[in-house]
Amino acid sequence: MNGPEASPFLAACRGERPSRRPLWFMRQAGRSLPEYRAIRGTGSILQAVKDPALAAEITLQPIRRYGTDAAILYSDIMVPIAAVGFGVDIKAGVGPVAEVPFRTRADLDRVRPLDAEGDTPYVAETVRLLVRELQVPLIGFAGAPFTVASYLIEGGPSRTYTRTKAMMLGDPQLFADLLARLADHAITSLRAQVAAGARAVQVFDSWAGALHPAHYERHVLPHSRAVFDAVAELGVPRIHFGVTTGELLGLMASAGADVVGVDWLVPLDAARARVPAGTALQGNLDPAVILAGWDATRAEAADVLARNGDHVGHIFNLGHGVLPESDPDVLARLAEFVHAQPVPEAGP
Ligand code: CP3
Image 1 (cartoon, rainbow, N blue to C red):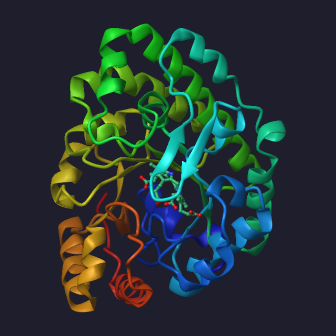
Image 2: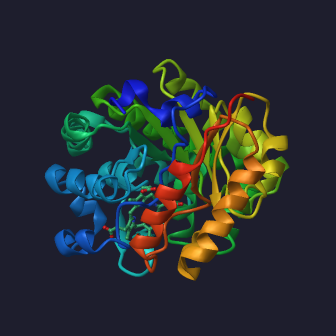
């Protein structure tokens, strides 16, 4: 392969025939890798990303180990909202936590616009370091307005999103104003990442699957669409991903995505039927399968590929991020296995 120009990942994103089956793993950089644990140090990820040399090295580690067809920036969806001073922290063993949750209109004052250069110069610096080193495209990313808002409103991770839904349905104007500001953060951040050299973008609406499709369509989709519309002119493929989004896949495609990420609960052939022809799919091996060892992983990966059939618009991935307990050797064999499969001849 000769760098991003010949990238199988970018070809598949565009629904063109790739030179080999492209693959990368969400959360490929991080805690499953011993070389990551060796250099990571202590302190929250919000601190770690302020060190571009460290963040770039962590981003590169899985490329060296697995030969994945894309890199994803080592960062977090909470970086912009933290950088504008909302007051969020990443608590070890918990996740993103808001010191004072978002509850009233006055809290909008803590969601001022993001100035990418002034607030997060280290993000673009990390991207610039990476694109000098990488032979594969770098994926930039942002949290979708809903998923970031859920942390701000709940005050931390949630299983039920009750406060978020209560605001969405009880004070829809306040909810819309918050999501509009978070959409602007995502747009500003993605533009800066692409300007620095990212070759694709992924919008993580990880928790949108908690919503009824009608609620998603009315209260969330317009804000995600604003993000996709704004980055369309950058000319890079746009990926839209969430978990338990089986009922939302068509709507998520309609936000303007070139690629829809599919979790492991929806058979890939069923997912294909839910998005418009020409939309590429990314996914969707159950991350837990890796923990079952190589034989199970090979069988399940073969099933994913069989369900993809002869569609060239497919990027192999897990249905969510690599679990920390994953054996890197199983992921390495998985990458080798997928890369060894013949590329379909034709088909959208
Ligand atoms: O240095 C570290 O501690 C690395 C692990 C870590 C990340 N984020 C990396 C990340 C930690 C502790 C966080 C904090 C965080 N942020 C958590 C806790 C979960 C955990 O792994 O301990 C959570 C849930 C968030 C919120 C978040 N960040 C979401 C919902 C997403 C979207 C992806 C998903 O899992 O649904 C992120 C993105 C993210 N966090 C990335 C990385 C490296 C980028 C995406 C990727 O690599 O695929």
